[in-house]
Length: 340
Image (cartoon, rainbow, N blue to C red; front, side, top):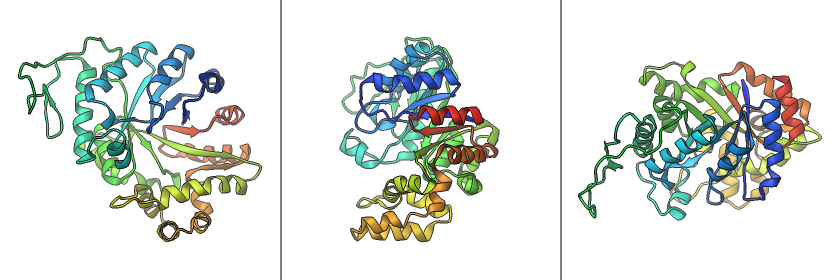
């Protein structure tokens, strides 16, 4: 198992993140991952880091599918791979309806079909074997629908990819999305994940793998894990509890909370319903208090460094390829990397 670093970059001066990234590069951390929601994008910071690091793989976790055309994503991926000397890893995901529709102004309809077609086009473009054509329910290349000029022809990217088989990850939580990940992706960027519940959590993934004629060895599982270093495990849990109460309990009008669903699949159906009920009734402190200690211990990393390192070591016997830590503590990174 390898370790990754998730930046959670929020637009701060780059001098504030360079020390931890360079430290990670020096001590052998496998990869650094950028994120995007509706602030800083996931791409720009990696272009900067490509020029200031030597060994780290550079991944997006995630680039939002509705925010870019498939061709724009393929162009970006090939460019970053060339600039980094073959270190880029493309992580894609659907995001959530309120960001897709409220920020990007795009419909959140037919998400699974959209992802399938998107990945198909991105792979064709990066493979660079032929001009890209696609006739699907969501995307058509060339476009010949309403408003088209009628003069378009298929296009082949005007950049030669460094790796035509550039690794493609999908961020997925719901079972149908996870199943699709197993079918069409090289890696899975997981949300809630715990070795203790691995069989249940990977069941849809393995269904997708079988459909594509592949085995679990062909899939790189990379959970992104929240870290809360503290003097005691209890203090670390308390720092994480409000976040997990929101993740599990929040639900918008007509929406479905996939984190709630995952918590139920992990055996926390009772607490999940309790958390949701308290939030719906406006009793946030009660919702926070209802987050089980055992859930936090399984899916996150709370406590002092020795406790965190012990828990990381417990993941080594799981199917996880890269454990991505959402943290910027150089001492913790060094201790964890040394232990592996």
